[in-house]
Length: 142
Image (cartoon, rainbow, N blue to C red; front, side, top):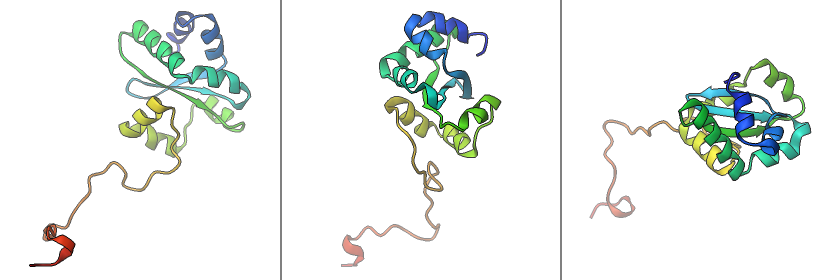
């Protein structure tokens, strides 16, 4: 992505490209998943880039330049997280989120933030092998 990113900045136009240039170099967090992170001093640029219209322009530019559809997400970092992001390290929670496609799709589609994820989220529910479901009303036999 480092070789393509300057082309993306040119393709999206001057104002959006200028805002995107304030971001930390985008990170690939999964197959065809791109995260653009802004440090806390660039709140206005983050807000501009996080709009649905601008995100779709970035996704289209990336698609045209790479020939593949990419999901693009914009994030704002807290003041102390910039050093961590510059080093390219991510927290274990970030890894867990980038792996779950449902969580990623909701976050990118609705500009949502995950506040809490229950243990076992996304895994099929299991029932004991010898226990048949009780289909009678209120659990009573007639």
